[in-house]
Amino acid sequence: MGQYRLKPHFRAAHVVQLIGVLMVVISVPLFVMDRLPVAAGSVDEVILGDSVGGGWQIPLRYADGEPVMCDPIPDVVMEGGWDCDGTRIKSLVVTEVPDPELAALRMMRAMGVSRGMDLEVARDGDLLVLHHPERPDVPEPGFYAGVPEEQFTGLALSGTGDHEGELLVVSIDGERGDDFTDLIRPQVRDNGGGDVTELELPSVLTSEVRV
Image (cartoon, rainbow, N blue to C red):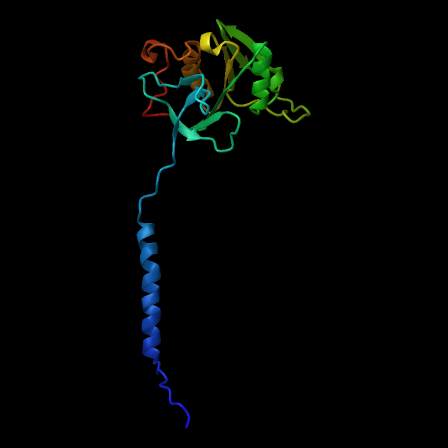
């Protein structure tokens, strides 16, 4: 005698109800996630110098003493890098520097500055200031060739005391490169010492309005 098994009976209404339940289960999380506030992009404090290793550092400040906070540049490996609303700031420290001027030029090239070895170097006390020479923007052959960066300035400061033989290098370029140079240059020249509110810093850039 064969075994008798109950066979469940499915009606069309049951199938429709099951589909409806599945749709609710799937749609509720999507509905909630769609209404969650979007997290703002992370910003980091701009720390010139050895921002990773904790060595020679100069925390960048606005004229009111507030820290400068900008978006980190993710593809920067060998130095600290930030994007401040279209202006890029890169900085690093090199050691065992016998020739600061030559080292500054090489570091600018390593940072990707076009024609880095052809930059003009001027002195502002102990501070080296680097600019592109005034000449037509004619492309040149080579890996580092190209049109000079918009509003570019390079800075380099030789270390003293505990940082003897080191060189702190900063590269600034972008939409407001000149404004940020006016903010950064006095602080690097002062080597981050003292009260920044006593320095002659521009008020055009503030912690509240950067554009």
